[in-house]
Length: 155
Image 1: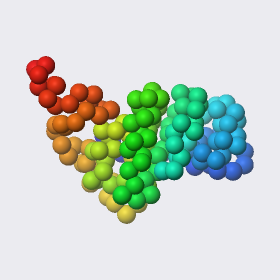
Image 2: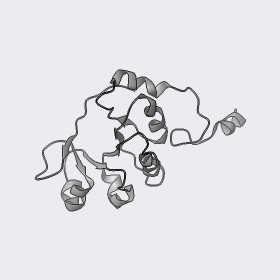
Image 3: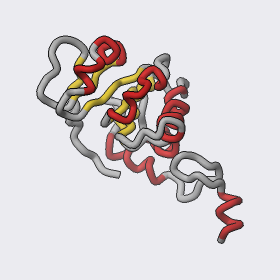
Image 4: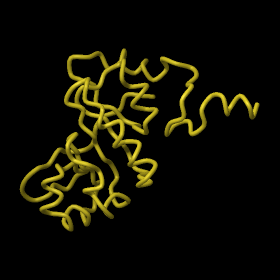
């Protein structure tokens, strides 16, 4: 719920810098052990056509996974976020990048994202208000495992 600096350095070739890193899947697959043994925070950027299961048993060893949304109509990242949180039990930072703006942030949060790189042409202060667009949800999701009707029955 707040604006913070991004400490990750996007890295895609050569020796790893002495900093928190975010690497592409291709770089990770070619340098898996070097990345996993890196002494700083480790993140991986996945494109929409790169399924999270490609990370395999490395998932719990990562500090951050960034899922790219190249356009508003591409919703694969929502499904990948749900899978990472629920099937793969990923506990680290889950970041949405690319076409991220106010109207999508609430729904991204429902699927398990907890950080967002807002589109450069959008106002980050306005986008932040999107986290509070709705006070109640009907459907079950990562952020609320029970649908509204079940919550009302328990009340």
